[in-house]
Image (cartoon, rainbow, N blue to C red; front, top):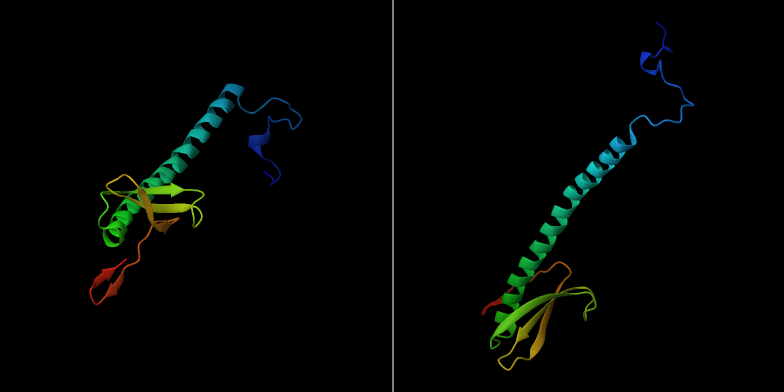
Length: 122
């Protein structure tokens, strides 16, 4: 046996136009690959959005408690064209229904705690 002899290539013809697999099998493999890739990507995107939403809820609650304690409710929103660019913004709602933007929370919502001698400042 020589190095140039490959039994797996014995019956193949390089000029044969027929595909190696049946077209239905190729279609099924493509569908399986697309579904597999979506199964890897979509959960990561959904988890990232849910985590950012939950973090924005908590951060907005802390900011409103510190900066607008007289408001009756608050709501964080993701805005693409906000005052500080795309990101999360915290709005406080007063008793009469007016909304005030309290603070921009950023693209990834966060609140920085600054300790003071009277407590904690946001």
